[in-house]
Amino acid sequence: MPSLRRAKPAAAQQTDAGSDAPASLTPTGPDAPASLTPAEVAEQRRKRRTGTLIATPGALYLLIFFVVPLGLITVYSFATRTSTGRTSLSGWNLDSYERIADDVILGIIARSAWLAFLTTVLCLVVAYPFAYYLATRPPRLRARLLVLVMIPFWTNGLVRIFAIRFLLGSNGPASALSEAMGFGTFRILFTPTAVVLGMVYGFLTFMVLPLYVALERMDWRLVEAARDLYASGAKAFWRVTVPLTRSGIVAGCVLVFVPSFGSYVVPEILGGAKTLLIGSYVARQFQAARNWPLGAALSVLVIVAMLVAVAINQRNSANAERTQGVAR
Image (tube, rainbow, N blue to C red; front, side, top):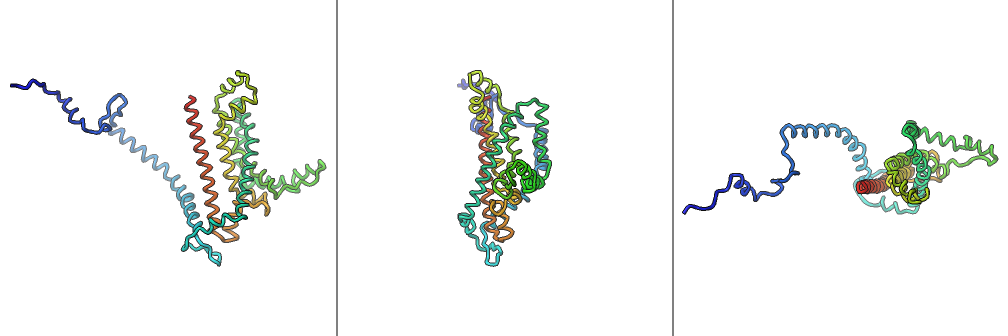
């Protein structure tokens, strides 16, 4: 008897034949990606080559002037200092890292962290009101004020530090004004106070710009809503404005604390023998003491601290973007 089953169409047979193929090879539905034409594939390859050519100079610069020196510093931190002051790479050890636990070095690290913390707090106290005022001005006035903020970057940092040294010196304007007011000679140079003032002056812009960006991007309707709910101006500021600008606060604190902790120029010019910070101590290990392993170990410590601060900043930025995305 002839078979009563009807033959399947060719398309159905092809579907059954390919039913054992992985699902990823047979995408279905309206969202399935369309196959690229040869012209589109060639265009993507051209864009990749162009991007590689553009990124190559920057990558080589980072490799030569960042990765290679960092690797050398790390290698020298495990080296041995001989009795003649030379550095031997034959016997690697952890002696330099163990010396970091000395009371003298720990005291220098603690002093550096304390002065960097004071610098960060002062920069935050000074920069937040100015950034708030800047973000609430009309666009034309805001642009002019931003130019004033950026002007210090147009001047060499070393020149600015020497200008601060002249202002704080015993023969400078500050001392002359103090004598005219009957307070005697103004003696602040070569003290921790002078170092903190110099670092605040040098790193204040690093605090203003992140705070300004955070305040400018903030939704001010939330502040208006808080005021409509009978919140005072101070309460609306602390409960609404400050939490919404937390990303700018953290970013500014990181950008100020990190260079302040490892600062070398400011303590050398405005400090003195009693204000020895970690940056100056590292430089003396490489120059005067000729103890390269210890200087390299301290450099690695500073770099690790900077990387931790950058990681905190990146995590904070990611959380802020995620929060803003949820709010939207």
